[in-house]
Amino acid sequence: MIEQLIKQEDGGFIDKEGCHWDTEAEYLQIDILGLCVCGNPDDIMLYIKEMLEELEKKDYGEYEDKPYMFFIYWANKKGFAEHGSTARCSWLTDKGEELLRDINIILERGDEI
Image 1 (spheres, rainbow, N blue to C red):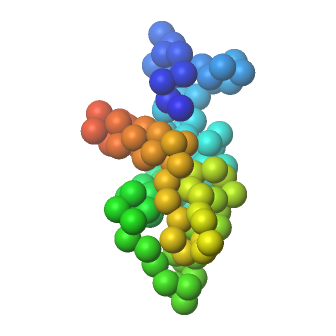
Image 2: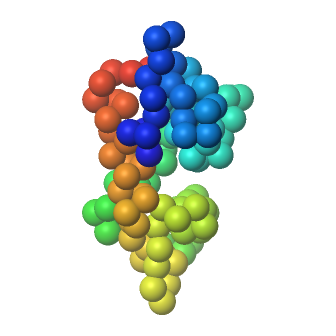
């Protein structure tokens, strides 16, 4: 996802639609994840990273765990995960793996999120 961004001289980025983003994290948070800059989207993006890592490990949650189940439903709707006979046992899609990889790249670079 972030590899399609074009770095600008001002330090920002332009996406394929011509929208300007101050950072790659801002692009992920707003355009890909559907967050806004109110509150603390950085912490939410880190939560999403943790949950994607749980799916990557196939460390499935329980139906009674409402935050887990909400995340699973959301991730399936956004195309980051999919499931067979039960949503609880979802796995990452290629898009979910790419999102996790992009978040890790941003964090490894030490970029501000």
